[in-house]
Length: 217
Image (cartoon, rainbow, N blue to C red; front, side):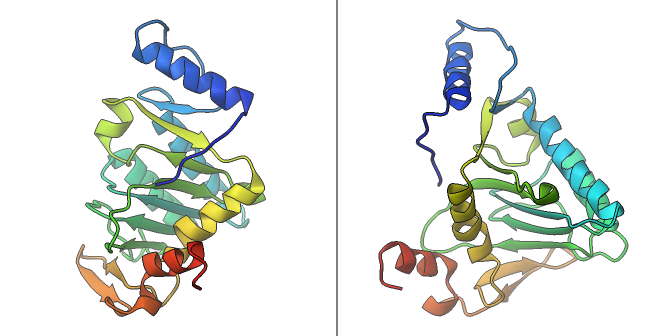
């Protein structure tokens, strides 16, 4: 998983406010940096997908990459289908259950879904959007499921430091999207096929990252 040590006043103030709410000492007011479920998280993700859709419709670059454990929420799936129809390139790294079907002509041909299950049980949720070059990236506790958006307290926080953002993008997302990575790829019928060599260290995204972080690369 990813965590963030920060002295950013907005983020720290929001974290304090979230814990005030959890202890019953605060009410649900506006947060400055964090997105909290069941309040603003779902709507903000929908807005981010819509912005990519509008960018693609206007002929501009548009991109969505998201990593999570599960994808089931209907309105998010519908928004991703609409984005795909507009030409947005979408990669979804979903370790577990996924109700979206990629690769359907006229609906989801610009969406790819993969699942990486390796030595380590991963638990990160990362939401990346091109955002007309601003590249907003969020780290979160929430999968894209109804219970996470509407029936739990969940938070997502932005990475604002460009160096940290690039590191999470490369290590947490792009590392898993390399063409030769051992991953299970979903087809348009919802079936999975293995791509890459499952037991090969060269094709194992987790082993690549482990070698990099331990200096054995």
